[in-house]
Length: 359
Ligand code: PMP
Image (cartoon, rainbow, N blue to C red):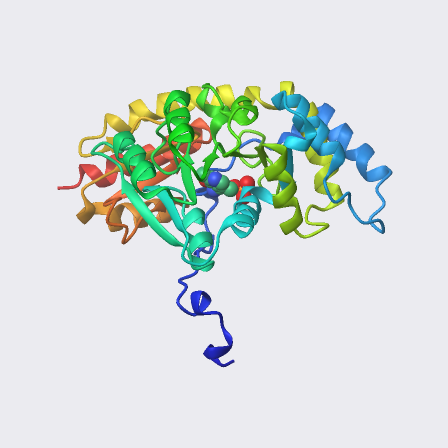
C-alpha cells in the first residue's frame, strides 16, 4: 500500500488501542459484571424475539420500536432520539455531521479519547482545558474558553471517564448559554451517578446533544447500542449522515426489550454503587494509594509512578487486567478499576496491599 493513498489525517493517526486480553478477570473496560440474560423475563423476551426473527429482512432505518421504548424511558419524543452501534458510533456520526476541517473542538482533559480521536480524523483542531488538581474540572476555564474561542463543539463527559467526577446540571446550562456552537454531553455513566441528566433540557437548548449507552448500567456492551438525544432538527441532520441500516434488527429488538425491562435491570446498579463505595474505602486504606471520588462504576487510583509497572504486572500475574494510563502526562501512576463482584475486588486489593507493602 502507498501511504500517499491515505487521507492526511489517517496517515498521521495513532490508532485507539484495544489491548489483547488473556486474563480471567477483565476490569479495564467498565463493563457490567452481570449477565442481564440471567433475568428470566428478559431471557424469555429474547427467546420470543429469536422465535419470530427474520434475518432476511433489513432492519428499520430509524429503529422505530427502540426509539419508542427509549422515548418512554427518558420522557422525550422519538423524533428527539437516534440510535446506533454504541455511543462510539454516535460520537462519530455527530462529528461527521458538524465538523469541517480546521473547526475548533473543546474538551476537558483527561477524558474519554474518542472525542479527540474522531475530531482529529476529520482535521478539526482540538483544544484541551486541563482539570484542576484533584481531577476537578476547571469550570471557570471551560466557560472562559467557550466564551473567548467559541468552539464549533464542546465535549463534556458527565460523569467523567476516567476520573469519575460529576458536573452539576447548572454548570452545563451555563455552558449551553455561553456557547454559540454545540455542547455534547456524554452521559454514558449517568445511571450510576444518581444525579440529574440533562436530557430534559433538549427542548430548551437547541445546541445540546446528549449521549447515552446501554453498555454500562444496562450491561449490554456486546450488543452494541448507544443513542443521542437532541432537538429534532439536530437528529434529522445526524440521521442523514448515518448509514441507512446501521443498527441490526436483533440489537434493535433486544435493546428495546431491555429498556422496557429496566425496572428489573437497573437495580444491579445499586449493588455496583454500594460495592464501589466499599472498595473505595479498601483502596484508600492502602498506604501510598490515592483514590479519587467516583460517581460511576469504576474508580481511578494513583500510586507513585515508579511503582506502576510492578503493580500492573502483579495484577496480571494474579489473572487481573486493569486499565493503566502509561505515557499520559495527566495521569501519572494511574489505574482505572472497574467495580465487579466482592471476590474480584478482594483479589485486586490483596495484590495492591502486597505490592505497596514492599520496601
Ligand atoms: N462514552 C464514554 C465516556 C465511555 O466510557 C464509553 C465506553 N467506554 C462510551 C462513551 C462508548 O460506549 P459504547 O460505544 O459501548 O456505547
